[in-house]
Length: 459
Ligand SMILES: [Zn+2]
Image (cartoon, rainbow, N blue to C red; front, side, top):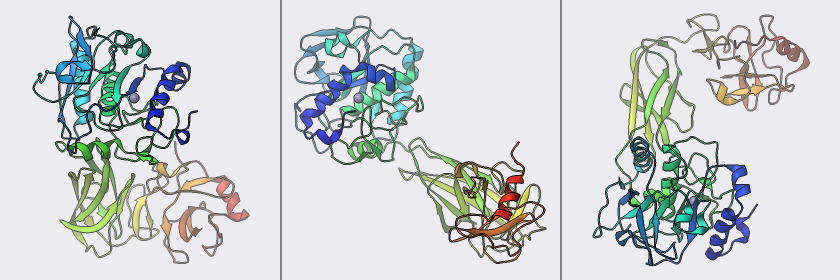
């Protein structure tokens, strides 16, 4: 594949784009959708310090078509430097329902930014970006774009009053249309292709149909992961780039729920709060409060697990988990719990819970609980899946090596990495000293045999 290392000048970016376009076979191998394009053009106007407008006009071509004049790029006068002669883009043929859903999607995609999305023409006196939607083929604009799903002029910087295009080649598919509108308009802000299937700047298939500008750093690239051509940096964050230009939009808080403990549950010292948190862009962190006091406990990556600090007194407490998104907008969920004494290996926990280090945690009969078989950390409620030398893997929880009663019956605290983990050893027990195996769960053969016989707990 083409490598960005050989692309030393911006002019070569244009050849990259045209090469990509000229090899539809490789494009189809990655993703069969008609792809948005960009076209290198000299900047008509030097980019301004502040954006020239906060309006994106999504122009639904009417039955009379959209007339485009050749010339210096200017949405206010329907002039574009992409066609070489006057052209008319034919009407958008999909239903009003498709249009409305597409507009909802474009608004949601740009909601994190101080940008207004409209399908009403702001007129010749108001600076605006414009995306023209219509045309049965890109060849209506220029034969060069016969295979394209859309096209935008591109200069690695904001193009004031830019006109970009989304062709009516996806059928009644609001998400595909929205993806292209988002990509083309953002090309006009100087963003390049991103190698991240969640982001509208991508060419990759396989991601969610509704794409959002991602706050994470992603490699650039169209058909392979490459260094970003405009910035010569390894990565681009479309969200950060656009928010830096336009500032944040109306806040959309994250959604958050506390999965456990459940309301009224008796908890033990160092109990674990499991949180589901999501956001339209990204969750920055989840914070743990107890009785309105910030514990300082934070989780920054899912699954969000927050371990309550020492010192929570016996009795009733209100637990609050607070998710904060990358725009700083919080959302919270609370649950009332009852702090009890520490559990012991044999008593103090109810239901399918088992006692680890004095705290009740989901046991082997709960999917992802301690001792359940697993193949990856994400399958375990405690986010730890470890295996022995033969590849037998189970969900584990940390324990203190050499201490008594730190793991439930049928489990032993064995060495793993720098500490210990509770490892299911069967009713027969094993590891008399509790610390026999050494190294990263390289179990001795006696233990190993018992592990092999362990029944698979998950239904
Ligand atoms: Zn593109």
